[in-house]
Length: 269
Image 1 (tube, one colour):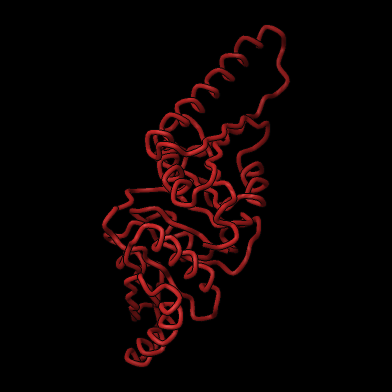
Image 2: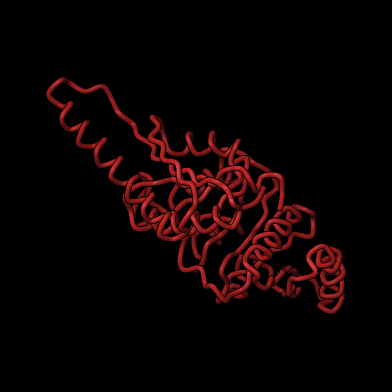
């Protein structure tokens, strides 16, 4: 495991079903890493007249109720794990980005945390995935226990961290790995050979893993990954850096995966 594996897994919490699904995933991840699960609920309280204090107290009780339920769900999903709960004042994006500096992983639902409930992917998830200092998993759809970990490999080198993360996740779960490289050239055989050669060097470090490499002729990498991940338990994709603007950092591939994947998506910087 990497040096960040023993750092806490941080999960953003609200009272939504999407948030509770993310907590289940985060709890099992914390158990695999043998580390603490930290549940974080962000609150924004504006100055209120005295007569509104009762409403503020009701809101705070709602927050603590959501955290208690989240902790129950976590312990049901992964009995024996250590769970911390925190209520922090501030915007969810700002707090989660700050937490990512010392976390091993940040886990979010695909929407909620103040975002538009009907959206395919919330702004909080996009901004945290783009700017976090550690890997981020956005939980959406269903993680299929028997499925592979699918890793998108960028030949420029931006995907190396993603490949390492994907292999470690697969090793912890004894899951097969499918490494996908999308290309738009003419020599498919050469692309496949080059990909296999590259992956082979990693396979020697993880001899117990079943690793398959697949070069796919497709000008749209997200389409190739989504097609390959129809039965996946996790999709892993790398980025070229961090920054406050999701569209400029994740790019079209990351944005499309976060919006349309039917399983959890890990974004690795």
